[in-house]
Image (cartoon, rainbow, N blue to C red; front, side):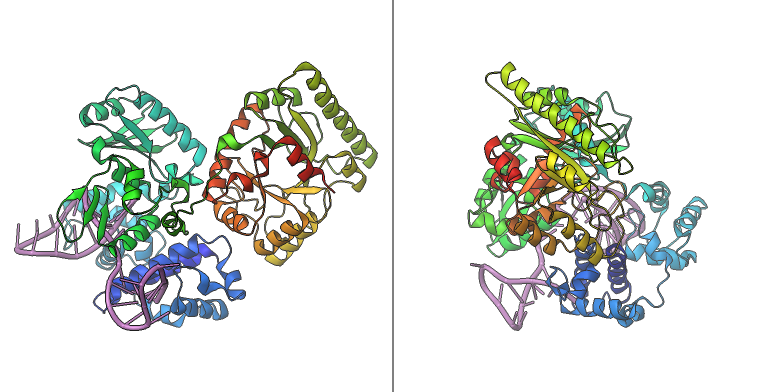
Length: 592
DNA sequence: GCCGTTTTCGGCCCGACTGTTTTCAGTCG
């Protein structure tokens, strides 16, 4: 059973409690507990079943003894008696109906009962049809408005789950913000929510503006030239649709209260809940308007976020780590990490030029020379060319000839640029991205490794496979003395493919022992290692490399998103090898 | 049902919006 399926089951149980046992003592909190447990399982970086096998399930925050016992039964027998009893008599359709925005457990149950919709299959369609025929308005607690709302929202069920890749959302936000800044009434402007926290995928773009003239700001916003549709415009907020189907929401607040607004809508939800729970014990109630002492009326306002956090007795917390993973305690203790920044980056160790033609996967578009020029404009000290390994059908001698030719070209590049420029000399590493075959064997003849400064190893096939096998596969590959970087380690694609299932703890151990560096791949659909695993890796003392995996010069700009992932994983500059100068990196990558 | 640098018992974030309501329930972020 996948994490998603387990999460769905736990949410169904929460709904079951809501319908059947709402009046029981503590029921409210039990419902929340099941919802939290569902969230926790859904966001796990390893399969819940594997954690269970290792006996680590109850270490997950949000899963206590009771739910762990239920899951134990689930993994052993395939079902949970208690859950089955609880869900008995509830129409399966209600869980489908709950996917419609605005319909929760109560309404879903009521609708499926009263309209006689019981089967899960086609439930939403039947609901839409009932609404169309005017059957909703007569139900108790519902009216014409409810019916109208259902008609409008059933269409959103499909699109509800679509999230956008971070760079796409970021580019839209950057453009809107640049446009908004042209209006003199905009004093401050920031992205909010998951975009400000730089989460790998973003649901919609929220933007806040500090201004004492909200009407003018809203008017300017709704006149955004690339807008495809106006969704709503009120006195303090508005929403538009932009090409690609992304919602952009804008909120305006006076500048004297801007700090609390920014803090609240940046989230994450978990961070805010943890922060508020903690502060409540100190007699402070927090909201998007400011801070209130419990025993006194009146709200204290904050024009910026730094003051807001300081008032709570802690350091300002960078948005990227506001996920309730220990940042609040660290901020109180003044022990927050000094997160790595884009300006710390001194080189890109994963670039594909067009030099090799017959490679196992897509080759780059641009010449080495051209990519080096761009690296120079980015202020780098070094780059590594890591084309895919030559196709395996080629003869060994041909492969060797090709790689020797490439080595000569890199040598030439290094020497010719030294004579051309006196000040900045970009150093070029001669590398290769080598496939890790399902067996763990590297897809390059042993003798060919000798031509390389170092090798980057990566999985590009057979993503589905048993955890034990995948773990063994990676372990075998990173033991090769030339392999210094493990690229896009999980192989996930945010647009669809799950990463491989592997024992990362074991792999991290081996990386530490073999001095293998983990890549944070900045490619928009990868962002791999995922932030949570970066956090684990940093804690374990591993070194990482933030790389773009560029196949064309313009992609070299994507570095900022890899840096965001590193920041979300609490990485400091000292955790990232490509913040080091050339000499140090060289000795790390080229030592035997 | 979960959780603990003031608790293993006694708490559990905060507010907005919507609609159907004579004072509040349900849902959402």
